[in-house]
Amino acid sequence: MFQALSGLTRDNIDIVFDRDPAARTRWEILTTYPGVHAVLAYRLTHRLWRRRWFWLARALSHVARWLTGVEIHPAAEIGRRFFIDHGMGVVIGETARVGNDVTLYHGVTLGGTTWERGRRHPSLGNDVVVGAGAKILGPIEVGNGSRIGSNAVVIRDVPENAVVVGIPGRVVAKDGQRTGEGFDAYGQKERMPDPVAKAVECLSEHIHAVERRLEQVEHPDDAGTGEEAPEGPATEWSCPIGQEDQEGGEADAVASETDSPAANVDRGNQ
Image (cartoon, helix red, strand yellow):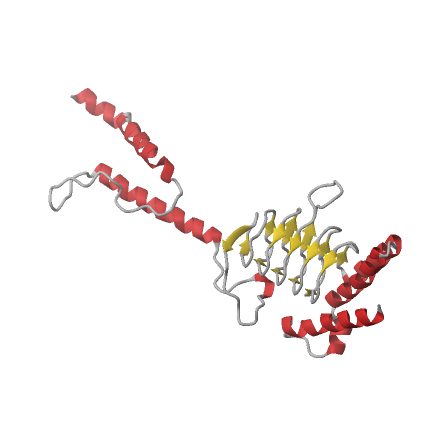
């Protein structure tokens, strides 16, 4: 048992050099990194839990939580070379499963969404990075090599090599190329897409398309040639927003123009 714990200790210390450029020496890591302390304490409490020393495992886990700010249930299943950077505020539930070479940043929660016994916490594959403040909730699967952006709230399964951002979490990239280091700090890929900016851009394009269509309705004749403008939309519409209501919206606009007070005056003059 001592040799096994010694080997795990070396793994947990050596992996810090690959994932934290601020690390200088093994002694510094062993004495000043609360994430490393929390993982080492978990290794001990997990062995006690498997030997059915439940109270002692929970008691030692509680002490480790008080000292490090990281709460890892002794029954959770965590693979090798697991790293928690900064540490504070991380919570890993009882039935959570974490693969090898996984990195979590501060404020991450692997939580459950039900009070029933049984499988209720997420499973993370190998080489997963979860950014600061992210919440992964429920018995869902996060595929190998995926990246969860900071402050994302993930409530659905995530495919392999995907990037997830937002609340609720949305997959914004699939089968993304790995970086040269094979690791992305805070789960952030280079040139990560912004779904909110994309939605605003789509709405802006829709507004311009509607304005062009209104100009065709108000001025059906081409000023230069005297030919009628085509009946179809002025340009191809690429965004899905409002596309299904385009025809109905135009009909309502024409109807409101026909029933306007100015139109009634013109009819009275006639």
